[in-house]
Length: 216
Image (spheres, rainbow, N blue to C red):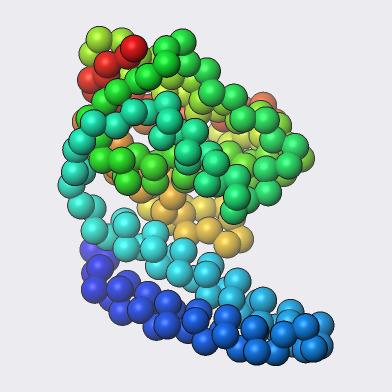
C-alpha cells in the first residue's frame, strides 16, 4: 500500500519551491528575455503538475471515510464546473445540466463529491479536444439518485473499458491513472456504484448511483 507520509514529504518541498519561483519571475519582470520568462513559466507549470500527481497519490493512499453532511447536489455540480472551466480550456464545449427539480439533497462528504465531479469533468474535457457537449443528468427518487455524466468525445476503446477504474491505468502522456480509481473509491464509500458505457467516436456515459435523496 502507498504510504501517505511519503507523499506528504514530497508535497512539502514542492509547495515551498513554488513561492521563490514566482518571486523570481516577478523580480525579473517585463525586462527579462522571452527565454527567461519561458523557463520560469515551465518551472512553475511543472511544479504544479507534480503537485497534482502527489495530491492524487495522497487522496488514493488516505482512503479516508466520508464526513457526511447535507449537500445540495445541483449547486455543487454547477460550482464544480465553474471551477474546472477556469483552469481548463472549455472553448467549444457546451455544458448542460438536466434536472427536473430545483434542489436535490443527499447526505455526502461535499469535498469528496466535488473531487468526483472534478475528475469526471476533467476527463470529459480532455476527451473532446475539438469541442462537444458535456451533459449531467440527475434522476432522483425516494431511495436513490442516479447521475449520468456524458460527453460527445473520442470514446474508450473496448479493450480498455474494464480497466479504466484500475489504479495507475492510463493512456495519457501526463496522467497517473488514479483519477477514476479515486472516483470509484469515493462513490463506493458513499454506498453507491459507478459504471460506464462508451463507443469509440461517440463518447462516454458514466452512471453514478447513490443512496438516499430528497428532491424539491
